[in-house]
Image (cartoon, rainbow, N blue to C red):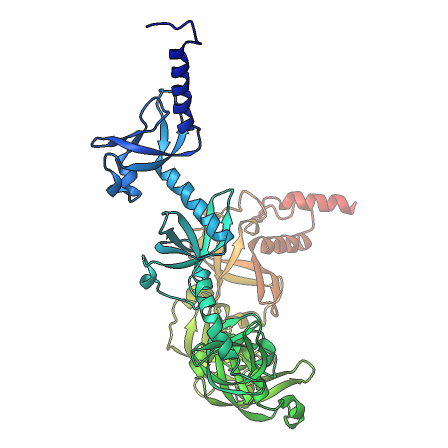
Length: 575
């Protein structure tokens, strides 16, 4: 290699000019989009020639095909790429065709957004909250919100998929590189001129016939008029009565007459009213009287009751609690149909709040009052079991449509109430006694055991400290289960009440079946409470022996092991 020492020679100057001219043609800089010519094609890669680079950039063929550039994979064809690195760690040039396409596409989107021009795109797929739109010219992807697809709610958009159409750019985020488009705006602008002509046809005071309920809002209801324009009826213009939401009065698809009350030609809006088609009923509300029966028309059925109309414009709420006397959870859907005329009683009129309350059940006799007249307290009647739960039965008399409550504790005197409850089922007939009636609370309580002799009456002629004979039924570690002779009830004598001497207070002394005496320790007939004690009887007999045999040495042959000691103490006390 020859080294030129003399740079002023003609050859050196010629080389310098050639080098400068070559470098000036292609300015190589990272982050810029450059053109590369396909120089070589293999099965997986495409090799590009770019002037000014020391090596050939390489592109993946699959990347080009996914971008729709399969037709350009030809030797000599030019492709735009983004120069990411002139030299990576392996000494190779790093370029990207897809990133170059996105950057070029973004520049075109920015230009269209700034000029407020529509772009051509196609909906390629659905996503959360909307759809993905592909820019036809550059392949850039944009977001189409669901609310911007059309000016009308669409249940199915399959006819719009992959169809080239215009979109308006409504938002660009240059930092994140996100674009948001609208199809609705294109449609609205297209209809705007036609809508202005339609609005011109309406004047304040016009009557619109058979407008269809299209949708609800918290501030009113939208109606479709002849499939050419949507009008709004504000919440305050729906009814003279108080309305919290349009769905209390209207159903989607219903048709109603409307009165035009406002026309805004700038906003292209028409305001209408339903209530102004009829006079204000609250001006003659005095014609209605409380607690009097009137006819009302069912207009709307809800989960919590029904909205009824006493006259056009006078809407009232019939709450579910006022539907029936006897049903605990009555349903207006099961009792009425829209359009039915039903009897009702006005229970409240509030002219200031423009509210009228009605009741359907007040038009019928109160079955609880009927029951109380026919079956006063202590009456015994035949009733049928209509329902049961884990602790009670519900029974009903054949001639009065009202349920009575029968607790398991009122089933029997002798057995456990919950166990006794298992013996009964729906349809069983019982003779029950009326124990309590609360008409205001709509509650009736009955009992079954009260119709039978009370085994507790066995204690009516007994008193405390009286000796009775009992039979031992069973024993356990806690005490004895015993039954007085002639009585049907069982009682428990605790272990501590078996004997005075702790050594004798053993349940194992008894096997069951023995008859022994005991004393009544506690007796309360009102509370039905009885306590029995063998220990108490022993103490009573012991006291009687002390009183009778008071001298020292007396009672040595008595069966009380401690009696002589007690007598000795008594003699000492007398001294």
